[in-house]
Image 1 (spheres, rainbow, N blue to C red):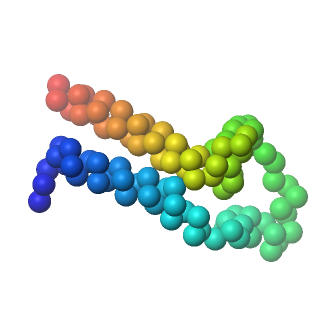
Image 2 (cartoon, rainbow, N blue to C red):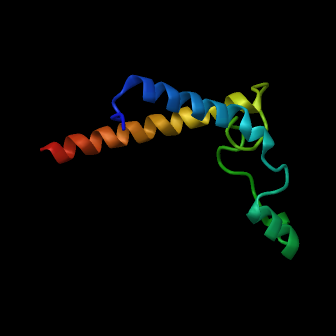
Length: 97
């Protein structure tokens, strides 16, 4: 098995992630998510409010502000990956002390 530091393995992982986030996610259900479905079933969907970041392009399943949904998903995955990378790097430095 190749070590994680192998650049080819990193690029393959990035490619698969972009493919899944940008293309395969279009196959996801257009139905409401679990919480929305339960709220509709029990009649309290009117109690929902918009999140504080309600006008962000990352809020819903569709593109916002003219940004295609696939691109929004890819950017979202990239942001999460960068945060995880930074946290793991910080944790690695702390454990090395």
